[in-house]
Structures are given as C-alpha cells and as structure tokens.
Image 1 (tube, rainbow, N blue to C red):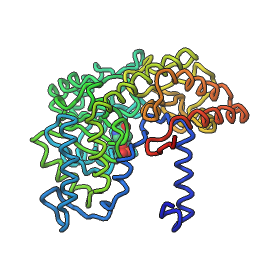
Image 2 (cartoon, rainbow, N blue to C red):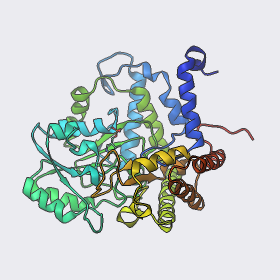
Image 3 (cartoon, rainbow, N blue to C red):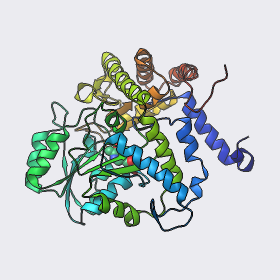
Image 4 (cartoon, helix red, strand yellow):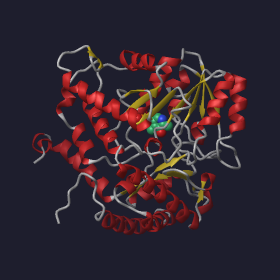
Length: 418
Ligand SMILES: *Cc1c(COP(=O)(O)O)cnc(C)c1O
C-alpha cells in the first residue's frame, strides 16, 4: 500500500485517478512526456528534505556533501550532453531559466525581441501579461504569411530598427528548424545578445537531430521535461564570460533553496539521454511526427507551414469545417481519450480562448512505444472525434477503442506481469 493511500485517501484518489487518466489516454500535448522509473523515483527521494542554497562546495547550509555530488553529476552530464561550457541546473522551471537570463543581461526598460506568441512564441518572450512584457520593451517578429516560416528579413529589419539588447529565439509551437547562425549574424550586426530557448526541442538538440544553438548564442535555456524527458524544471547554459552572472542571477537573484530531489531527477534523465537508446527514441519521435503529419494531411487537415521537421505540428482546423474551433475540438478529443491543446495559428482570426488551431506532438506517444505504423490509427481516431461534431456516442466509441489500445502500451514505470 502506498503511504498516501492509508494517510490521505482523498489525495490518493486524485493521484490514482490521474495515473489512470495517463494510462488510458493518448497523450498528444507536444510539451508533455512520461518520465522513466528512475527519474520518477529520484523525484520522490529524501533529497526533498535538504536545503542547499548556494552551489556545490559553496553552500550556506551544513550537510550538503551528498547533494553536492548529485548537483555535480547533473552539471557534468548536462555539459557533456549539450557540449556547453557552463550550466546552471537550479532553475525550478523554464520560465525561471529565462528570467535568470533577463536578470543577468538586462535592465528594466531594455528592448527585447522574440517570436510573437500567436506565431509560436512563448509567454516569457515578451508577452504583455508576462513579466518579460511588463518590465522590458518587447518587439515581436513573426512568420511569413505565405511560407509560415520565420521571416528572417523581418527579423533583420526589426533588429536594425529597434536595436534590442537581447534577441530571443526558440518557440512553443513552431514545427521547423531554427537557423541559429542567421540569428547570430543579425545579433552581431545590431549589437544584441542572443538567447535560444530550446524548451521543446532540447532532446532533439542533445542528440544532434536538430542543430544546436550552443556555438551561436550566449544563453541557451531549456525546460527538462519536454523532449528531454526529465522532471518538470529548467536550466540555463552559457559560456565562460557569463557563467558567474548567470549563477548569481539564479541564486541569490531569483531563487532560494534549489529542489535537490528534482536536480537528482535531472541527473538521472541526463544520464539516460547520454545513452544510444535516447537518440533512437528521439529519431522515432521525428519519424512518428512526419507520418502523423502525412496522415492528418491526407484526411483534409492543413498543417501550418505544410508539415514538420521536429516533434510537433500545428493543425489549422478551418479546412475541416467552418464551425470548428480549437476549444471545441480540444473538448471533443478529450472525451474521446485524446489529449491535446488548442493553439493560436499564425494570423488567427479567432481569440486565444477559442483559436482555429490544435497543437499536437509525438514525444509522449513515442515513449509509450508507438511507431510509424500506429500513426494512421491515431489519425483515424483523431479524425473520427473531430468529425463527430461532439456526438457523445461516437466519442464514447473512440474512447473505448483508445483505452483498449493504450492498455498494450503501459507507462514506463508500470511493470507488466507476464
Ligand atoms: C514550455 C516552455 C517554457 C516554460 O516552461 P515552464 O517550465 O512551463 O515555465 C519556456 N519557453 C518555451 C519556448 C516553452 O515551450
């Protein structure tokens, strides 16, 4: 019996319901994944008890000799994985990793430039409701209306016009490769610093399946829980010139005690990511995404930019029906056991609470063992749910089929008895 089960049945009920939900549905949210048993176990250790403000060898608390080993393992593995000069593994989240760069490199009122949220960018890249948009002066570049790829001519024009202190690259809903060299050239021309936020694609970058920004950007930030398949958290990579400033921005600038159990889980995940099987996993993510993109296109969906180079795709629902919105389709799919999120598409005429798009990704499905051969079935269920127009009986049929199917692909920490 799990100790929570006996001491706190209400809490245990919610946790087991969530586990059941994950087991019986197709997780297609592009930013989610299922961690390994080792990562999950590390996050649930006594390391959560430990205060360790400071850095290995320079702590403000006694008793840190073993958590120092843990943090050093995480740092060594991250620098090996990404071939960077310095890494800070303490940020609690991707957003805090980005804030650490802002604190280290910017002053309030400085101009920053990032991809527009509606074109795939992230809240922390200068959106007005976020600290990054309130404390700095944001300028946003967009994708080209025709190609739906980043408009590098516009990036250059805006950078020369606004002279941003920091150019932010990276995205949450962009399915194409980033040309880091081209951004670095523009940053150099205009005297800007360059930051690459690889939160989504970190696993693909670590395995060399997406070009790495490390040689081009002063700052590379990431989450550790998306394609990298670690615990929910963030980190910042930088060069020798900025190492000290980044470290003091994270602590004491932004955070107090680091989450040592989560840093242990990061070390476990980075260890896994250094193994050859992780590269095979990331290759499979991309293969699955390509096939899923073809299967959806064949069923009349339009993909933003026409397809994908990475783990995700942005689906424009409009060609499949005038009344379809992201919010409606997200709800129908959820009833059918397919979990996605509504998403703005570039130049979306609808509001963010409605949207014309759905974002889907293959990292979590791939972790569960789905291959290219399963993508046509996934696209079929997806399409049946969309075509149902919310018909409860059809959605229930799909849900039952999905639940039956997923039983053959257990979550990584579930051991199946033969
Ligand atoms: C997910 C994401 C983040 C934020 O990560 P949190 O851990 O949710 O704070 C930052 N940047 C990009 C591009 C992301 O996709």
